[in-house]
Length: 94
Image (cartoon, rainbow, N blue to C red):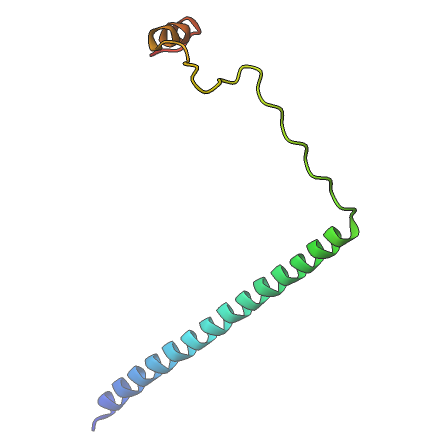
């Protein structure tokens, strides 16, 4: 085995070892970032739950009143031609 062959083999070995090390550190970085995000979400959830427990209970919202112009079942809207004319007179291009 010549020194040139040995140097090539070492370079190839070092390249794969470096790639494996980079993959391991990259995974470690991703794991650390994921843990930081998860911890932050847990902290924010605990703060939200504590805030909601401290405030007085909210009253249920009153049901909205029906519109004055609501259509009753069986009533028909304006004819299509009338509606289109109203849209054009209102400045809409149809």
